[in-house]
Image (cartoon, rainbow, N blue to C red; front, side, top):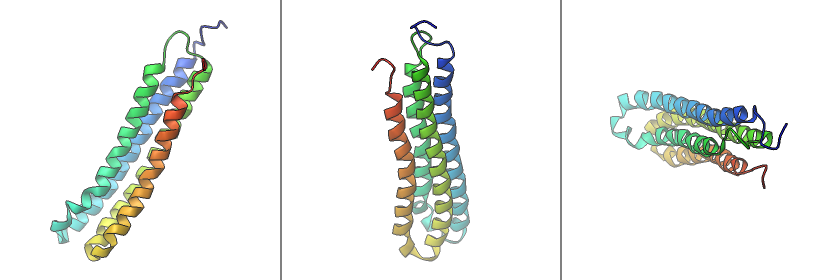
Length: 158
């Protein structure tokens, strides 16, 4: 093996980029769908609260953006020459960290969003509590984004 890199290393980099986008988008889709079901059910009885209850859907949508950011960062660094296994593994870890944390955050946002908007329709005092829980669920994905950025910046040439 020469110092120019490894022929299989870009595979791991591209898998990392794909994992970040796919898993984060799955979390965003689940969070949006699950919260949307709650909003639709609640909107039948209290249509004036529909726009106020859209917060979980917006927060779930941001998860896909996190995955997109990491995917772009990784894809810009993958190269056919000089890209080593260390780089590929670092980018795989980066994509998995961001993607899987986005998936778990999306699941949490979906469950909390569904139950929260229904409960808010019955008791408006629960709105602030629901928002706080959603913020902590979103923070899980933010942690994955931060770790993903740090890992994607790792290079075998440093």
